[in-house]
Structure formats: C-alpha cells, structure tokens
Image (cartoon, rainbow over all chains, first blue to last red; front, side):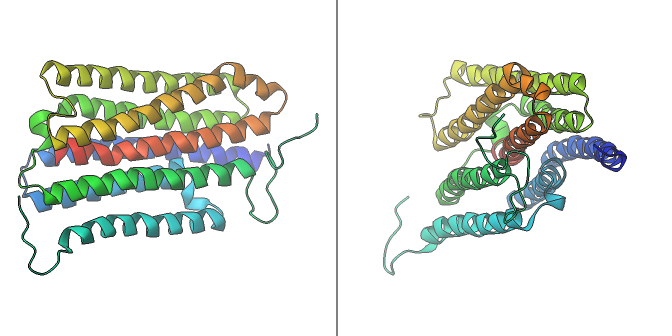
Length: 105
Length: 198
C-alpha cells in the first residue's frame, strides 16, 4: 500500500473516533430529551430526528457511503422509494375506508 | 492458485465494484424491506390502537441505553478492524475484531437478562400488541446479531488464515462483514427510541 493510501486510512481512523464520540453523545441526548416529557408528536419528531442523524453518521462514515460508487447509490435510491412506499401504503390503508363504513374499536 | 470466484479483489469494469460489495448492498436492500415491513406494521398498529403504552413504563431504558453504547462501540471496533488490515497490522485486526465479537456477545447477554425480566413479570408476546411488537422486532434484530457474531468469529479464527495467502481478499471480506454489522447497528439506532422512549 502506498504512503498516500496509508495516510488516507490514518485520517479515516481519526474520523471514526470522532463519529463514535458523536454517536455516544447523541444517544445521551436522545435519552435526556425523553425525560423532558414533550408532547407525543414533538417527542416522536425529536427522537426520529436524532436517530436519523445517528443513522446517517453510521451509513456515511462506517459504511463509507460518503464516497461510494454510483451503482450503490442507485440501489439505495430504489430501496428508499420502496421503503417509503411500504410505509405510505399501509398508512393509506388506515385512512382508506369505504364511505358509510363504521369503524368498531 | 486459480481464482474460482471472479472479482473478489479487483473491480468489475462495468460496476466499478468487487462482486461481494454489490452483493452485500443488494442483500442489505432486502433487509431494509424486511425491517421496513415490520416498522410499517408497528406504525399501523400504533396509529390504529385506542391506547398504546409508553415504552419506558414497561421497558428498562438504562439497560437499553447501555446496550446501545455497546453496539455503537462494536461498530467502531469493526471499522477499526478493517482499517487495521488496510494498514497491514494483523495483530490489531484480531484485537479489534475480537472486541467486536465480545461486544456482540455482551449485547446478547444483556438482552437475555432483559427478556428474562419480562418473562418473570409475566410479559409475553401474547400479553399485548406492544409486547408482541417488542419481542418480534428485538427478536429479529437479535437473530441478526447472532448471525454477525458467527461470521465475525469465523474471520477471527479459521477465516483469518487467508491473510497469509490473499490479504487483499480478506480485507474485502472484512469490509463486507462490516457493512452487515453496521446495518445491524443502524437498525438498533431506530429500534431503541421507537420501542423504549416513545
């Protein structure tokens, strides 16, 4: 391996440590926020926002998505579309009731 | 030695990737859909229910926070194992991969104690929709952790011999194994707040 590559890996190692510290700190923040007893909607929004940041850090740096080949981005873009379609389809089922239908709970 | 599996170290000209890498990403895409189906079921069940318990009233948040830290630590040791191979440091590779396996085992043991506590309080998957969702999601995630431990333990033991014959191929194998392990960590990052905090 060339000197240039070794330097690059060493630089990456420093980034991995920084990401680890950020992930640990964000975990503490998530738990701390849950003790504030926010409203349900605000609580869900904040928790999912922090989880998305943490997930992005793992995906971008540990899974190297920050500098990946186009084909992998294409596969993931398709996955994202299908994932949200799945979520929205099931949710649309919840609101999609035939007029006059009574929901028994 | 003949290379029976093509493109294990060299990139395929059309994809620009070695084969295992595109393979693992396609597999992870299918995993996203597997967990996605369960997450969407959770959302539908929760939205459709008249009352839903807050996770922290039933589940143990401090223990789950500890387990989150364990899994995050295992992710960083996993990527450090791969970086160690890139830096030609086989000893450090084994140290970091060993720590990754250890963290995975700690996660499972803690989860086992957590499950046991629930059973002692007569909380089973059949108790409520919430408990069914909890056991299904964490159970499936736990199975993924077990799978990752088995693969990493192989690369720590007999699989590591490849370093002396085909170091680049082993480095790529560890990258692929790492991608799976980070995905397992990523799933937990979402499971933790969804089940325990909301």
